[in-house]
Length: 189
Image (cartoon, rainbow, N blue to C red):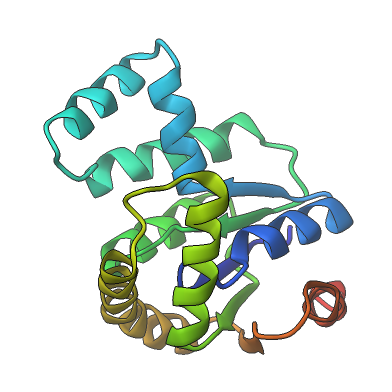
């Protein structure tokens, strides 16, 4: 089983590259943001709980995020592997993911660190905000998200570098160039 984790700042292209790899290698792309949107759109008990939390302006707890990821893993027992995008974001989430995968005897095989500069992140997210009409994505909030990402990701990079194969990829290049490099790396897993 090929389980892969993307660590990348907002706007780096992890969603795009995750989708390309998922199609190429028949993997399941798990995006925590997409899962949250799906759950809140559903009539499930978990979806109702998430709606209540978000409506109060609170952050969804690690426990709920982990439960959603566990549900995804359990619902796809015959998957060739998973690509994790946006999860984990904290060391406790990383430990929970490792535990879930070890219980299934299929640990992470690769952590991909997709790097772009802060200036690129801001430029890409402002452009995306304009295209998608995201009024809350302004330069100030984007910078704040970048700072939070860096604070959360450095411990994760250190955590995974200790026991999982990691590769750092220049995310500033054209999408097909990055995809070709990643396909070559993943094909050797």
